[in-house]
Image (cartoon, rainbow, N blue to C red; front, top):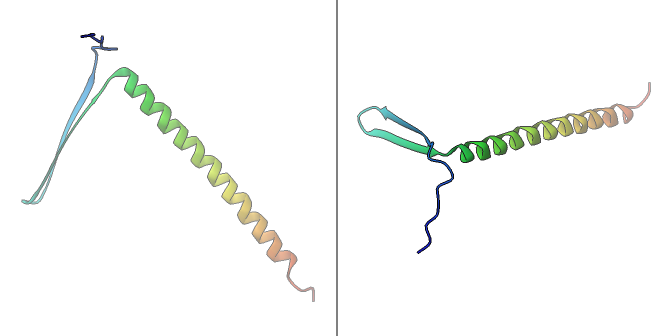
Length: 76
């Protein structure tokens, strides 16, 4: 059998526990390697950059609609 070396032995772990009233208890645990943290950072950066482009495009479209509406008004 082939043995695979782990990329990194330094792993970041976090535990969280939330209790809501007497009936609901949520436990969560996460485990990341440094490579995984970099991947998550790149994904979040991509999402943030793409939303800024979408917001800018929506602003331009709204301005274009308003300009068209002003052009359609009848002159007195």
